[in-house]
Structure formats: C-alpha cells, structure tokens
Image (cartoon, rainbow, N blue to C red; front, side, top):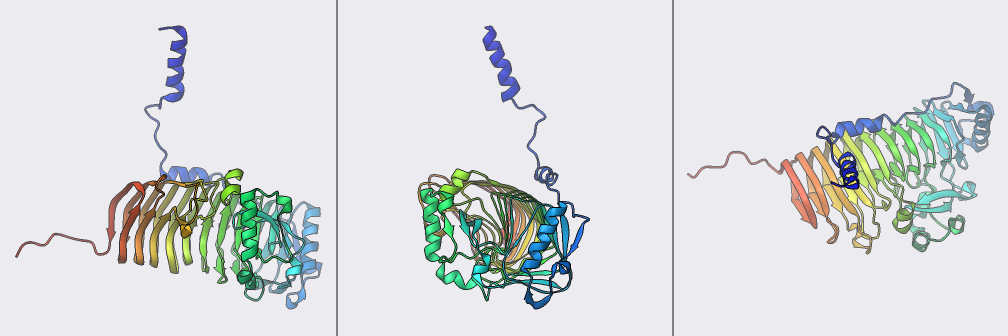
Length: 452
C-alpha cells in the first residue's frame, strides 16, 4: 500500500469510524446537558424602594417617572433590586430595563399600564410576528441587557382590553406591509411602524438579552403576546401565572433564542401557552439563528394550544423537551407543530414525555400546510419522539400528520400513548417511518370473542 493511502486509511478510521462503545445519548442525558447550561441570574443585594423615587400605589398617580428614576439609579450603582410594595401603580408608558436589575413586585402590588399609545413612543427596535421592525415600545422592555429579573407575588396588567387590543381589527394593512418588507429585504431602518400604524406592542419583551429570570408573578390582560424572548439566551421562567384573554395572548414566545427552562407555570391564555418561533420566511432563513435547547416541565396547560412550534420558524427549531405536564382546563390542541411552504427551515429532535390533557379538539397535529398556503420552501420535520401522552378525548382527531409531497414528515415515534375517545383516530399524509408502540385510541380491544 502506498504511503499516502496508508495515511488516508488511518484518517478515515480516526475521523469517520464510530468507536464500538459510542452510543446515542438518551433523552435524559440530552436534557440534563442542556440544564447544566441554564443558570438564573443572581439577585442584587442593593435594594431600591420604588416609593423613594416618588411612586404612589394609589391607582391614580403616574408612576412612569418613578420607574425611570429607579432604573437610572440601578444603572449608576451597577445593578439593584427595585422593590414595589403593595398597591396599584398606574404606569403611563414603558418600563425599560438596565443591566443587573431585578424588579420585585411584592404581594399585593399591581402594575397597570396606561392606554395612551403616544406614551409608548418613540419607536424601538422590536419584532412583530417574525419580522424585525421599529414599533411602539413593549410595555416592559429589555434591549441588549444582561442579568435581569422580574420576581415576586404581584401582578403585571397590560390593560390590553381597554387599550391596544382594540387595534386588532385595524392591523391588517400594517401587518401585510411588514410581511412585504420581510420578503423584499427592506432595510431595518426603513421599517418604521409607529403613529399611523396599528401593530400592538408586546406586554414584556427581552430582545438580545442574556441571563433572564421571571418568577412568581401573575401576567394578565396583555395587548399582544405576553412574554417574548427574542434573540436571547439563558432564560428561566418558573411559577408564573397567566390570565390573558385578549387576541393573540400567547404565554411565552421564545424566538431565535436558546437555553430556556420553563417550569411550574400555570397557563390560562386565549392563545398558545408556549409558542416556539424562529423568524418568518425570507428574513428567518437569512437570520439563521435556530431556537433550541428548550425545556418545558411541570406546567399546567389551559387555553388555545398547549405547546406549539411555529408557524414562524424559518430559522429552525430543535432540541425541545416537554415533560411531566398536565392540564388546568380545556385546550383546543395539545401538541401542535405547524409550518407552510413559505417558511423553510426545520423542526427536529422534539421530545414529549409524560404529558396529559383532558378534552381537546386535536391531540397531536403536525402540519406542513398551515393555512393551506405557501410555496418554494418546504420545512424538514423529523425526529419527533412522543411517549406517555394521554388525552381524555379528541373531538376532531387524535393524531394528524401532514407532510409536503417533496419533503415528507419522517421519523415520528409514538410510544405508550392513549386517547380514551376521538372522532378520527389517525390521519397521515406525505409521511415516512411513523412508528407506533403500544398506542390505544378509543376503547382498548381485549381478548377476541369466540364463535358461539
């Protein structure tokens, strides 16, 4: 054998051969490796009382100046915990976070945001349904900051029903314009959506942030999505309660974000409880930052859908774990993966284990044809592992998978799954390698009857 061929053979064995003792990591090992990367930020020992900055919890006084002063004081000190005591605090305008700052809402404290849209100007960098724009400020906004937290037993009320939510019926022209700018690649500096437009702001948004904690608070009455994690990482959200019933009142929306733990959350939302996203269409594919390493555990679902991936997911979603969750009420769908041929990207390595729902319309719904539209950019959906999933009933369908003719949904594994009652048990189209192990839909068939 010639010398260069010997070196080639050795290289192939070193880099291309799998060692006999190498093995695929288990679900638990993959999950635990992700958990090691997620650490809640430390809470500052420097304490600032909001009332020392002129705040009054009388439901009448405007506390926007007090929050601005407290944030600036925190910045000057290199970080602090801003404590809001019991009371009802009207805030006419956004709260903008600074580095190393915790906002603690003590028991009986409630923030209510004003409804004058002009108070949320000037416009700030943000995103709307998967497209980057400049728009009215989110009501609580953290942009390019680190080590921030919202904690306590108090309530954040977006006052959406009496404010921005009324824009829902007016938003279509601006919504379509934002999507056109996305497809056309319009420079971000030209995407200005402020006065004269009707795109509702988020209640809470963390944009390009690191080391985030949300714990204990109740989030209510959002004007749009409740909590949006955008291009952010190392996020812990636990023991949060939602009471958000306006249009598009999702609970948590991670987008272009990674290393996220959502646990012990009590959902009660008019829309998706958790909706994992990764940008829309042209812009999402160009941005190419996948949402990944997301763990959702010990939660109670209630609202439109339990856990959703998409439909804005063009940069891809991977490594999602949904574990040990149950339900607090009705959900239209339990697990919902949705894309269409405008999106592209991928959805892969999704693990659902030990989750239970009550009555739903659809149990598991995976579709490449969301809204029945789109062309040119089919999504790769594969490696979905669903184990120990139960439903009391599914009034429409138990398991639905709709692939794309040229890009089938493949490698979906259902193990130990039970649906007590449903209308249509299984509907599979454009699929490949869908595996069932111990799946019972409807009444389990026991010993066959004998001839009499």
